[in-house]
Amino acid sequence: MTKSPAGRGGTAAPARRETFSSRRLFILSAIGSAVGLGNIWRFPYVAYENGGGAFLIPYLVALLCAGIPLLFLDYSIGHRFRGSAPLSYRRLHRAAEPIGWWQVLICFVIAVYYAAIIAWAAMYTWFSLTKAWGDDAEGFFFNNFLKSADTAGLSFDFVAKVFFPMLAVWIVVIVIMVAGVNKGISRANAIFLPLLIAMFVILVVQSLFLKGAMVGLNAFFTPNWASLQDASVWAAAFGHVFFSLSVAFGIMVTYSSYLKRKTDLTGSGMVVAFANSGFELLAGIGVFAALGFMSVASGQAVEDVASGGIGLAFVAFPTIVSEAPFGAVLGVLFFGSLVFAGLTSLVSILEVIVAAFQDKLGWSRKAATLVVTIPIALISLILFPTTTGIQLLDTSDAFVNQFGILACALVTVIVVTAGLGSLPRLQRHVNKTSTIKMGVVWRILVGGVVPVALGYMLISELQIKGTEQYSGYPAWFNGVFGWGMAAALIVGALLLSLIPWGEKSKLNDPEYEEFNAVEVLEGDIDNNKIEVNA
Amino acid sequence: MTPVAITMMIIALLTVWGGLGLALWNLSRHPEEKEDQVLEEVSQEL
Image (cartoon, rainbow over all chains, first blue to last red; front, side):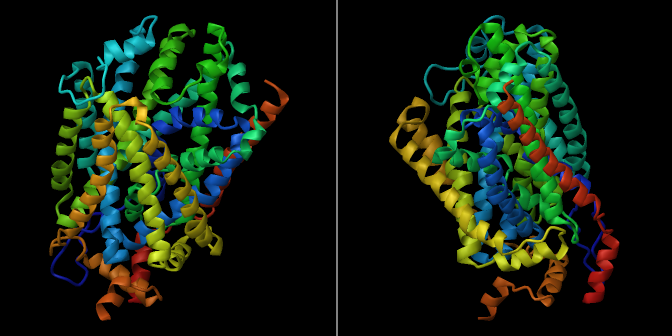
């Protein structure tokens, strides 16, 4: 941890901003954040549903034209302004601070339900040993394990088998968070990520030896070229890449703010982006090899057994575990992978929130972590280990993704490009230390292609969710925990921006002032200073 | 597996993992600088 006193030439010795001790640890942590549950349970099904082998084309186009350019935008903001999301956007322009808080609140919503899925996966790792679901994986998951209520609502009827694993998840992540960037986050990623990759590689190899694996892979990779003419397939590719890379909701801004001054931002980013894609391609192979086995074993077509998300993980996979040779090993590897992928992502999501309050209130790492994470854990533990937890998770996940992350990303790119015209200065900053230089193409992609793609997706989602009740839940339920929650994030972001930055806050950070002075000397324009002088 | 499925699988693996290989190779050609050197350069600029 780089926490030596700044104190060069000054009597006060404020703690220096933590930094990742090496580029390798940053890359590991960024990959740990990007590789999450979505890589394992979302990508295989999205690719299969949207053209199979032909999906590779829109996927690569989306990765190169939107995902990676947006990732570099996040890196440039975090690294140039060296702060949490609210502080970085505040330093970009004082009026842009609410964007940062919007991202923080999005992370809050995701964190409270993400812990529940990790807890389910942890329990299923254990259940795999005894194949506790018997012959009815679906009935076991919804009725025996979750004790799910028939109708969506808000119940405080707690389920012990979910509550205690969730409590354990929260204790683990709080311990990691208290330890800080280097001793906590870096170390956790340095252990969990290699473990995840090793487990997943073994899982894929085992899946490939199952009878019927080639049937599954054939279904996964057979191209449906006609699908390339369908706009929704391209939207699915842009949507998936966007969510998979963890861009535009504060994580990469926060992580890159902990990078050393001279770091190859784009070179590191390319490794993160392609490692994330490499992992999900591996997941596609492993999952469809297993689904091929299920298809052959049950005498059904692959299209009838293929599924994604919770259905894949907690219904289809347990069925495969029951029937496959050495199924218990397969189950432990699969659910263990979900646990580790989830933990490294949850840590990065929480870091966005902890860093924001640490910066704004000037608190120590330990105080900020405890004051922020304990209430989040309590809210999570009150709302999700209940008989209505899964419905609440479903609605909050769907709405925070579309009307939180997507809407916020669209506003962010519009404000940064058209609003503040900041792309040239961010481009200059990225190019100063990076090996892969960004040119005018990057500005066109971030300022043109990305907003068009995000705008199209957002309008499509507004039309879908505006005309039919999501998942058939009651209107009040989606109204409060879907639409209402998404609107509350914006109101909350504006209110949090009104809290003044105190003297102790990181807005008055001599280390940054020194850094900023050098940047301005080298020709950068400080938006906030211009406004003050005018 | 059909020939077209095998071809698409190979192309997918080559582009995505090849991209990762290239990215790692590029990074390995540019080792990171030590922060002490950077701080020295900054103080000289100031």
